Length: 98
Image 1: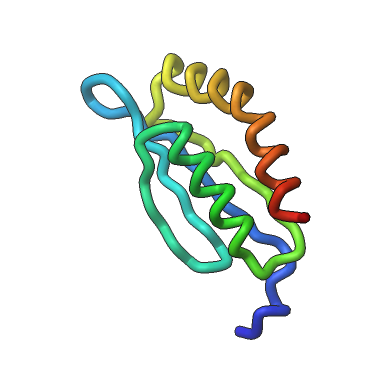
Image 2 (image 1 turned 90 degrees about the vertical axis):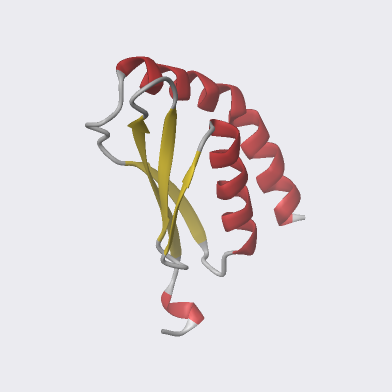
């Protein structure tokens, strides 16, 4: 597949709660077909930023999949942390465009 066939980088994420405490976030990058798991919202943010900065796509979207194996407390915590990281995303994406 040629580079120009990709116009939109999509990274999907699903939250999976661990049996004890904590969670993992399963990620899939549709441009590279890479699948991995991260252990924190900061690792999720690092992966998103790195993927966008190295992508050949013209645009980007992050999609949260239904997470039937996630506890409400983990979903709420991740949502709160993502809100806190929104400014970081904006700053890092603006630097990449310069």
